[in-house]
Length: 382
Image 1: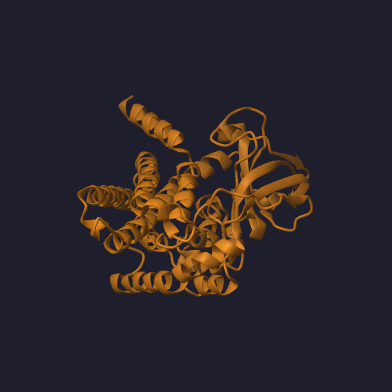
Image 2: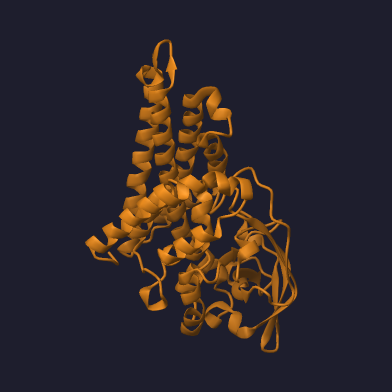
């Protein structure tokens, strides 16, 4: 464990109170404004939530993977937009630098990411390259001691507020991992243009948009690790870790949905008694609790394996696949328990029902997780 037990337990208690007392009461405000309130962002910075996974040497909390997912279990009880504002700094926005950055790049960017003074954004997906990341077309052409980037990135989380983009670009034409490199591109660099924020099914307050590079000239020092060809492999390592983080978020949301369902079932009366006394309602509650418990155990096991230095590609994919499908089932049962009320926007289960649909898509779709798991099985048997 990166923190001693007492210190970590104090952090968990603090995050639990913060979620209960500060985040959940502001959920409707986030939906109405499509933004996280500035005072909430400041409080998240003060708690160190932007630097959970960044080493203490660079101003972060330096949590282990197991500690990180346990914190995310708590954060998940509130609207996922709150977690999202810090999520890229915790995960895909910083971890490429943590994994493959030079010492100079780490010293330049990680402290600002850990404090939340700079928002990181991971630019991989393109109009014609999503699950097939190897198909990306954004190019980086060497020009003296600079590179010139051209291409469009799509659905990029936190792009409207990002100060630093980790951009995956092609430095060679061949379709292979060595052809893709990663560049650390600061917002405001000439040649970067942002699209309008996307209008999404759910997760209001978590903003995404296109990022367009038009002859964007960056110094050679922006090349991650000062090495061409490490972008694809680094991205896959980042996603391995990110999948455990997202899986933990799904568990936190499922806990919240079960809590809302139990409270409503105890209060709502039909046929002269609370619907919580009906066995078919109890069955839905029980299925949701068992699903959530199973996902939690998978995630904690996978996180512990990662902390021990094991290869967790397969188990991370298992956990992400199961947890994201699980929270969708839990959300569906919650709406069913609420009945007509569950279809109304005044109840949080309606919002979560839409919010959780994304988890089966990003950080690798369920179908991609199935392929990853199967490939790892076959590889192990070879």
